Length: 338
Image (cartoon, rainbow, N blue to C red):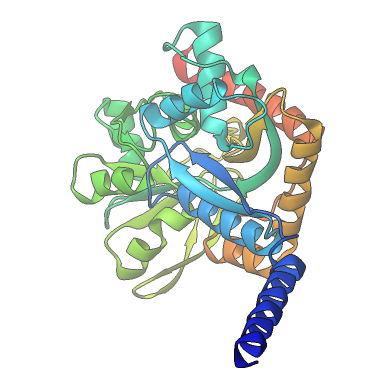
């Protein structure tokens, strides 16, 4: 009798456990991992944005786990070459920077460098990064010093490779002053900033986020915002700092009779997929991106690091990239004299 009762209890327990699994685990969907390929090193602005985007996207769409993966080299070219060859059915995403697009266009059209990928194989879906380029220097180095060294031909900058968007922006501006700048290449914003603090270059052209902490302690200073109205948002050891622009609130040393607006290029980038991806997936990514932007966590964080809230999606994202490429080509012509 005792043995029969024991067997009955075991049977009932087993039935309850199986029922619990069926109700809870049996119908649950397996979380799908989505890689976000970041073409730049850890610690830079693009890397930080990809990780913040992935975190919030995962929290709001728990059926996916978004994981950032850095593939560095060639200031974005290595990752771009990798990404163009993945299966379009893959759910891997890509951080497509304007700079990659600019260098691709110039390389293909003018032979400025060998380009190991086809931009047409990468499809921008949503803007997630819109930035203002800031020219940073060491304390006591001002715009007048920048222009003087540019005219002498001795100015060195960090901020991507030659013909990166920071170089196109600053180089085209200096061309209007009959000056030039030599680009010293580093991989990622953190290394580019280190080039300035170590004295290897005269200026670093980077994002607001890249220089905020150093500006606050006074090791570097922002001397020029390559934007229409300048930039306010930095704090230094002595309080708030306003950075003059190139049209309104023009920096001392620039010629008020010249039009420097051609140097204001779109900067930042998109979350992108492979061209040819399933429309259901690309539409889902657009939906996810809109949801990420709709959170206070993302929009507040973007503003905290000095970037701009700027949303464009789908076909409009491609049109925006085409427009940006055209402006970058004009900046190149100015810079190169072609």
